[in-house]
Length: 267
Image 1 (cartoon, rainbow, N blue to C red):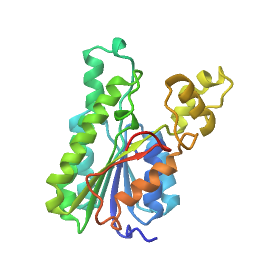
Image 2: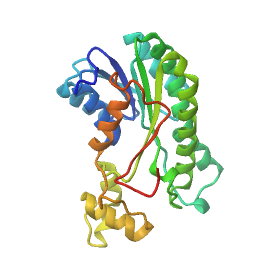
Image 3: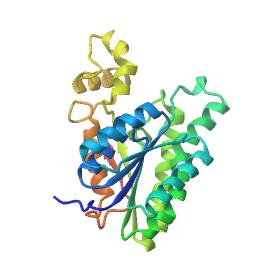
Image 4: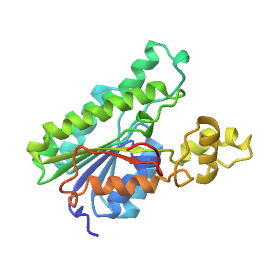
């Protein structure tokens, strides 16, 4: 299926690692020119090399601190200077997590700065470019936990719920511009950072943090949140649905909150 990315321009925030990188690589392979935004230069450089190998010879990495409004504005100004218009914006940034009793006001402020306001600021900065393009799409990445709560990630989930609400609202206000806006809610996804963070914890139970079936067993045992497929997901499985939603081929899906979680009790 041709998704219609040939000649298009795309930005993926948080595109240097994990799900963001998988999405950026998919867009590059489909023919889009891709800019990835993240903070760390070594990871950005590696991501750009990967995107060029995937099929985007003019891929670019832009160093942006997504917790800082001025840095976000400067990052998108660089995209405007480079391309002038934008077809696809994918926003993947998320904050740290913690239990309620562990978090003070500064932790909550930081969670909403990354989990909600980075998306608000990125969309706001990109709108002139999206409106200038022949067609335009936005996807934000929220979280399965906005429907299936987990006490370990209370501020993360609250900030992602707010982002999902903003996304839904924008699908209405931008419909007149022909800009389609959707939200993808990943379930448990086995990224490199997930595996690194939880390797020792799962190993203590005789489980492999890189194995999707072992990961879901641990999730079920500890949080009682299994999924119908019996395994965690992979970054490329988030990338495939996201790529469709931000493609020209998607002509009628907007305002959707799409669970990509291996099957759950929620719709």
